[in-house]
Amino acid sequence: MSLKQKDSQIYNLIQKERKREAETINLIASENFASKEVLEALGSILTNKYAENYPRKRYYGGCEVVDEVEDLAKERVRKAFDLPLDWHVNVQPYSGSPANLEVYNALLEPADTIMAMDLASGGHLTHGSPVNFSGKTYKFVHYGLSPKTGKLDYMEILKLADKVNPKLILCGYTAYSREVDFKKFREIADKVKAIAMADVSHIAGLIVGGVHMSPIPFFDVVTTTVHKTLRGPRAAIIMCKDKYASAIDKSVFPGMQGGPHENAIAAIAVTFKEASMASFRKYAEQIVKNAKALAKSLQDFGFKIVSDGTDNHLMIVDFTNKNISGLDARKLLESAGIVTSQSTIPQDPRKPWDPSGVRLGTPAVTSRGMKEKEMSKIASWIAAVITDPAVAPKVKEEVRRFCKNFPAPGL
Image 1 (cartoon, rainbow, N blue to C red):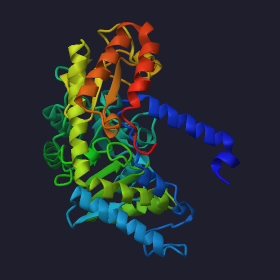
Image 2: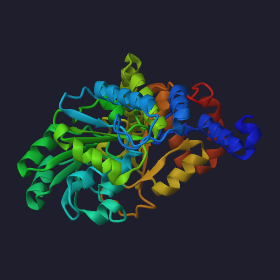
Image 3: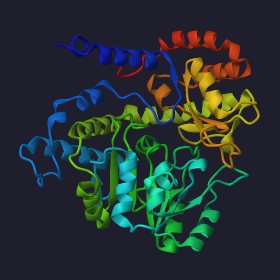
Image 4: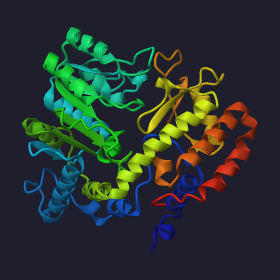
């Protein structure tokens, strides 16, 4: 019997979500559409297998096949990121947050000092937010963005590092729209003898696609999720220099996790095979072209963009000149079939749960085949709805019809 026959409630909810995804414009920077092949691996019989520890070191029998799966995933990750021979890969982290915590646990002691970007400026909860385990366990000192430019100020970051002498410096952001100069971060880390760690969860697909600088030549440890610009499953990987490999592996298992999700690891392998194709490089290039086009079109409609533009897949729209909060803007746009996420802006006068901005991203719309012309159309809808909320129902119907011309992969 099928799921539809055996559990119609869940089946119907899945179909309802399928319809929602198909009929709306997804501008959430951290979401994407996984291919049918990725979804097939994720939903495969590999879900059945328990495989604690690492290949050829398992505590369970019957792991010879999943050992091959895990080895293949690591091999494809190595190739995609062009890892040097003295780098190690761990594909077992369940998601991005555990991956970051597993690195801290491996390389630091509680109360050690870490430098990272604050959440309001574009960091992540696991980059030392006081409500997160990371902020409760380690001493985080946060840097932000230049109030004048909305960009990283590497001289100010160096001054702060000289002052606080961190054991680890972390870069990598959830809401920063400019290219990161990893070489400069390496120089800062060397100056204060700190470990250099990059969390590239948002830009990993751009790095693999050759449209963003890679941290690998400069850094000690790199973490990433697989489900954003890489279009993979909800999972994560840790890459590190060999000198840190043993400590990080032990931190992942048995330090923080039990059996790995071999179905997700198989889906990681599929993801990186897809990312090795020439079409993926074109996809990554188009993501950036679309983001630049969307930002420019919104500016033409009078919207303020933090840092005055973007170099990657996302942008932060500052609504302080539009007499609407980020939360209300997000809700209003969603009522018109345009799905976004609210976001703080640098030095935001409003609270994080009702901030001044909205974060927009182009990975998902690019996966649907949309290009610069479509970004201009989307910007016009955003401007229309923000200017006159009464047009939201009309725009929603236009969006629904528009989306039929751009089928979403995997749906």
